[in-house]
Length: 236
Length: 242
View 1 (tube, rainbow over the protein chains, first blue to last red):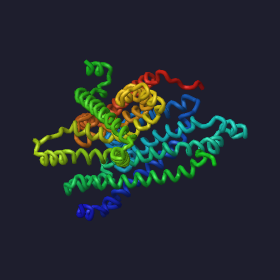
View 2: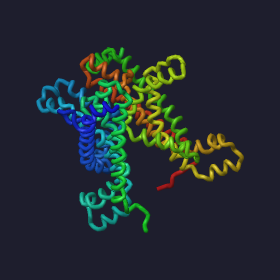
View 3: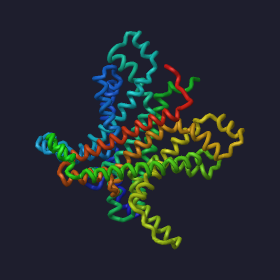
């Protein structure tokens, strides 16, 4: 156990000597996919609640597809499936993009988390108090101003508890990245396992790291909720 | 017949190339695995929820540790950890007890692993649902002289299901999608079948998309069934008109 730690602690945390590995890689995967998913899901969630079916339906179809299929299949399609099409390999730009495992992994993760986040934000927009929107309209706010100043600030705050769940699920989902040869925490654990045959210890260390990150994220989101959701608490 | 039909329609690019039975077998494996894991998870969830709501700390504390630990660790990490260690633990146990050697097949190991992991999620679902049943119901049942098991079976359980169903539905979808990971630990499920078919025909994209569509069909059908069940268990309750 101690030898295992001595040999692999660096790889588990940040590097195996050449590449970024372990915890640093997992955090990079998580933050990249969460950031892309967050930015894209804001316009998509507004489109999702649109009264125009031609705007609403494509977004609804997208979230239906990506929430109804496993992330692992989505990753396999992005990583091995698309690259197996000859037309993709002939296009220099597409070829360069899909040859890199990192690009495929972040693309699949971002698309997946964006679908879930869109539904979370759309739900929060829908449950917006009608009086608030009517008051904003009475003050003359229309179009994008209504969304930017009134609806989105409130909707994003109210979706914080659900959003924190999604971020933690995404942290847990990043573990499939090793199937696309991305050296995240689990990949290091598997390498340690096949080199030392200390199965329980190798995966146990990985489990402890994930558990710690989960607890830290839960704590951070609790602080964020205390700050941004204070208006929902009991009045004094 | 299916193949000739496709050929006549000029759609031979979409032929399954004789991999239909393999895909079907994989789908069956996925469904079987999900259902069995779900059943085990529901049983563990009911036990866990009762333990968590119990007055005895001996039951409450282990259940608390179980749900916190399992839900804090990614399912794939737990799957690899349990799946690879399960046989070792069992061998140690049988040797210590001087029983015969027991070998667990990959399918049972998969069911036990998935059931154990999602039992923690079901514990939380059921705990919330049991707490949502009005206290007066249990008190009235006690006043009628029902025993503990009768009280649970005839009064708490049917009402609890109404609150638990949305959660059960969510968890079912999560379990179904989590079974896609078992191909990593070597079970011949739908993902494995699609990968094998794709690799030997050089049409990986087509077969993977096909597998995704099969998952989509299963999730859609189960969504539909769930709505029906929700209506059924909502008998006697109504929502306010808006």
